[in-house]
Image (cartoon, rainbow, N blue to C red; front, side, top):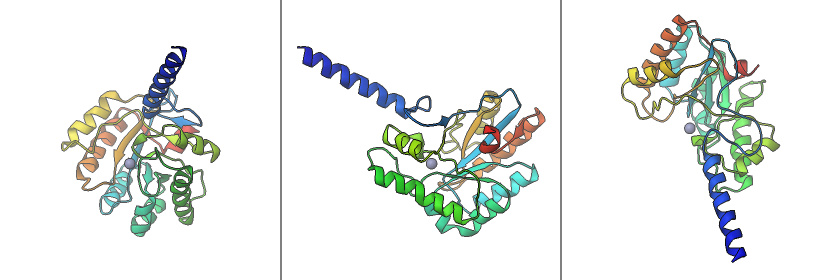
Length: 228
Ligand SMILES: [Zn+2]
């Protein structure tokens, strides 16, 4: 009888922890951020899953028009495939983050596999001449237990987000932009995507977001700048 209760408690605790570990609100070990605590009117635009020409390059042109620097969480395989575009990002002063090598969910994977997904991409980013700390973003935001343990050992910060306008579903840039504009707060980390297919909608949404928030007095910073 007691054994049954103990087993039930263990299973329920595990399931609860597992559920929590998948949300952006909780991580067992190591440093992670969904936003930055500040009173200043600063926000960070983050773009995942690239580099992805021609959309990443179009985004660079657009951000340049507004004098905005963003953070790009890039996939190692895409860095290898799109050398010119990643160099374009670096040359224009955007922050390059690590979004794993092959963008698999880093759960139920061996520690060696997870470690190689992180370090291979770090090496590719270092080869571009990036000297600063390389921030990490877990693919799909999934982390559970092994990934946080490894990130902690590697002294890597996991950068999640507090604003997800779901640009990967939306076909109307206004919908994406309005979500961001009506929910923004100082220190927000905004999740967008330059990779994963046709991204014209995200680019159009970016223009509305930047135009509107700059008019409200917001400054756009990279995640590293905002963390300082
Ligand atoms: Zn991703």
